[in-house]
Length: 346
Ligand code: ATP
Ligand code: MG
Image (cartoon, rainbow, N blue to C red; front, top):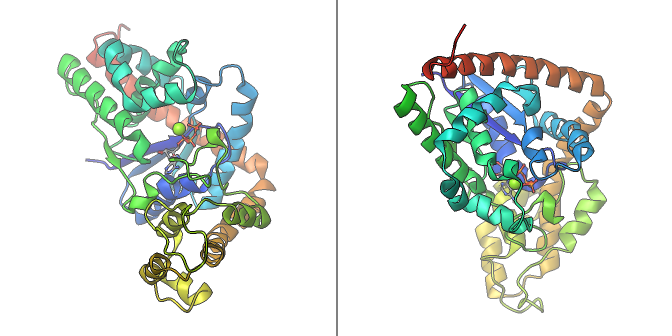
């Protein structure tokens, strides 16, 4: 069976380091592994509109920002099809048919939908489109017959719901759709990177992000202001590493060679953590190291971004070309779906 990837992001803001470790870095690795026959990367503008209906210009402007972030992280349009969701209207038609296979109570039980409704204060007035977005996400995944969906942990209930839709469709109308597998980052710290304020998730909507496109001085300020262990007041105090955002970031970003380069007194992260636990290691020293680590990771990305920013017409060409290709694939699946449903009349 062909190995196919579908994944993407909502154009609600520039991408941040949570996206990078949770999904983007993994996509680039998979893209370059040569193990996948087709890779589709979707900029989910229609999904972003489900909770930004009154701000279409915000969604529109961020399409190019997300595309620039993709290209600067190493997604290669020769290997990955980058496209805009709303330019593939076949996805909307698929969603419409899948809606008949899902109950309202099943959608209400989806834990990610639940927590996102809370986060947006939608309790009393949920837009129907927002409520149904897990169904449209199932359409996105199945339209490309994706076998693999590399995303962060918050997407687990979405993939589960998609698998149920596939199962139901195939059992009612005959074997047509492919059941996808979620692919989570292997590094625990990358599953859900906390914000610089220590909140459970770095998120565009919470304003607690280090953006891939931030300037070095902004990154330094954000890191130096980060939350650590609130009981680690003096350098000599013993400190807690678990749940300490600075150490979670080091778990996510640092590699042994960073120690040789920036902190040669220690051989690895375990030694640094032991010292922090014992006491005698100040937050400032750890934060300075984290700053060096993140700066070295983000500098090449920022440079490539600046180059792509000079070539915006090329970026739009990439999106147009990708959207055309994506539309062709989705149209084939839609034809299969209509055939299976016996609604292919002429
Ligand atoms: P929004 O607030 O608009 O929902 P977001 O920051 O949650 O934005 P999405 O576009 O919803 O970003 O998510 C894109 C991808 O990035 C998903 O695969 C998601 O799992 C992953 N992701 C988002 N935030 C994090 C994070 N803090 N840590 C790890 N992965 C993340
Ligand atoms: Mg989100």
